[in-house]
Image (tube, rainbow, N blue to C red; front, top):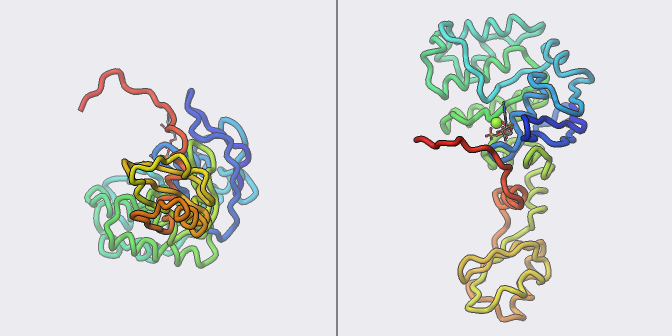
Length: 302
Ligand SMILES: Nc1ncnc2c1ncn2[C@@H]1O[C@H](COP(=O)(O)OP(=O)(O)OP(=O)(O)O)[C@@H](O)[C@H]1O
Ligand SMILES: [Mg+2]
């Protein structure tokens, strides 16, 4: 699939802003970004549910609409409302029947961890159970591409683990998976590739390890002991400096060189060196600029 120069505006808000992204068959890709970064907008355009304002989205060599119509795509949307008054099995069966080469309904129910709820009415499920139904619905058509918008948002620990086991089994069959999440560990653990969106643009694209490296390989912190922070930014390897009270936190791409330079300055009180986490990387990649402005309601009520 390819996004070429894709922009989507809502009035003055550029939800997606000149997006360039290519995903190859068989890849499992995580889409990360803060609230409002443009993840859902991107996924909805990929599914043909939302036309781009500018640019082009291609899926399996054609338009998103034709790929979806051919039953090659399964989706789990962030705001999908399940149909009430039918049972889980009926709903998954209805959906499966609309696809040319559907998955066996029992297999879809089992993969989504719904065996025990197959006969339960949809409107009598808990939030996490309803979420599993949305996953079963996404699987029902046996699609080549699964598009999942925050698939684990409402799931408990056990359901989350079961979900990822199913998802990986599905990906191992050669299918492509694109999912969004706010859980960095999930992206790191379950995706081959992480795409970080920031205000509608790709802020970073690579494996979890690559993103950590990009953010600086380590965090070096120390007590200033009254010394000024002025020389810190110029030290070897240092890519960013944060001061919290008397403590300085340096992001460093070469922690050995940074520590040696600190020792030369006799700034080694309370010295700590820690590898950068994916969270550090994510914050460094998305926090550099203020969030997009939004309109506030005139009156705020609780
Ligand atoms: N229908 C809409 N009308 C107006 N603005 C919208 C609409 N949908 C989204 N937006 C705006 O577009 C931007 C991107 O929204 P989007 O839903 O794609 O973000 P997201 O990355 O999925 O966020 P979240 O993590 O909260 O789900 C936000 O600023 C949002 O307010
Ligand atoms: Mg969203």
